[in-house]
Image (cartoon, rainbow, N blue to C red; front, side, top):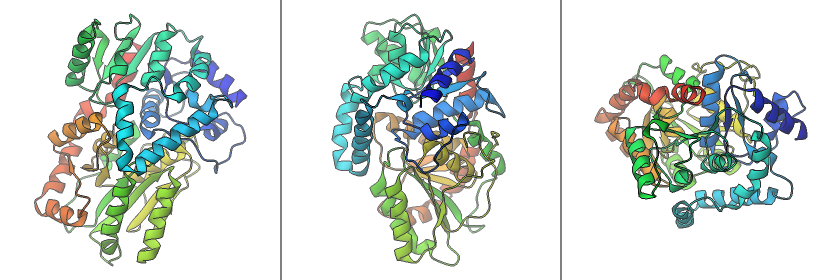
Amino acid sequence: MAKTFAADKAYLEATQLPIVTVSGTYQEDLKGLYGLPESDRSVDIVLSRAHYSMALAIAVSAWGKKIDPAKAWVVDPTNYVSKNEWSKVVFTEMVGKLLARHPFLKLLKDLVDKFGRSNLPILKSITPPLQYLLQDVKKPILSFHIAAGNILLNMGKTVVQVITDPHVREDYLTFADHPKLTYCVFDMATKQELLEKATRLGKYVDPHHVIITGPPVDQRVVAARAHKTGWQPGARSLKLCLTTGGIGTNKPEIEAILESLLPLLGQPKSPYQLMIYAGTQYDVKEMVLAKALKSGVACQLISELDPAHFEINASLKTATPKPKMSNLSVIYHPQIVDANELLITHGFPWADGFITKPSGDMAYDAAAAGCFLLTLAEWGEWEHNVREVFTRAGVATRADTTDLPKQLKTLTDQGWITTAIQAALKLGPEFTQGAKKIVAAATA
């Protein structure tokens, strides 16, 4: 990775908008981007789809129709953790997956969230490569991770820190009164929360340095709504996308929902079509395929991109409707770049509704794509706040994982699904244009 390490550093120093995140690795796609031999089979370490997809959304907004390193460049120091420190990255992912698949262990995650993330082993691992990559950058640096932003501020860098959720963790306030720090926040309530929490900590934050932008959504996802007119009961099957997160979150709920819908998906004229986004999670993909086989329901595996689709696997096309899917399909790829592109290509343009935890990537994207939301179990206060935002907007309600078919029928009969889709299609720029506003704030 020495060649890509040096190339990333050079791009960051020359670009108008340097962007940093901490989401995991995409080393093979980096090799391909720089014209080096790559493997499409190696497995990425993925800690968060959100931190990757939202950082990419900003780059896409800055780039326009073609990747242009002069306009923006994204780096993740996880790609360059030393061999001596690599075990800490693997350990962090392993623990994350364990928590994601066993809800009764969630107390451990809550403890981490309560006492902050500043002492996690991976943070010491990413610090040296992050410092090397950004040490000579003079422009403001856009940060999509608390730890990255704090490391950069400690280096004396000018940082624009994106608070991606309608919730302010205390870690965001470590350098709250730093003269080289600007915040981008979700909405006015988040701005007020930030100012109040900073005051309680005895730190003054200039309100003009807290910019309301809305959520960062990939403009290719927003473009998907242009092809949608809504849905009426009986006109066709309702298209549902059931999704996990970057570390396989909500797997038990996904399994229960799949089992409840399989008898209906096997019918000749099924009322539903179901696409499951397994992301980079092999075990989720295998679970779907095994249950489909046992039930005698054909399952379409979506795991390869059109080679002309994306330069981090060519042109930044807007999402367009794809050929008709089978009643059951699953998206999987061992690498986050490709898995994310598959979701943008096949998921958002296709779906009427998403069944997902109300995370600050999937919920933002689904609503911006004109889809209703059925929300799974929340994994923190920030997700509670996300659900509340979209519930107030008329787009979301909690999923009943004990009997989803019954809930879907009730919501259909009540007209809620039709109304929620229309509400999503009418969402204003505060939900769909955040990426543009963040680019403007970071390059002002």
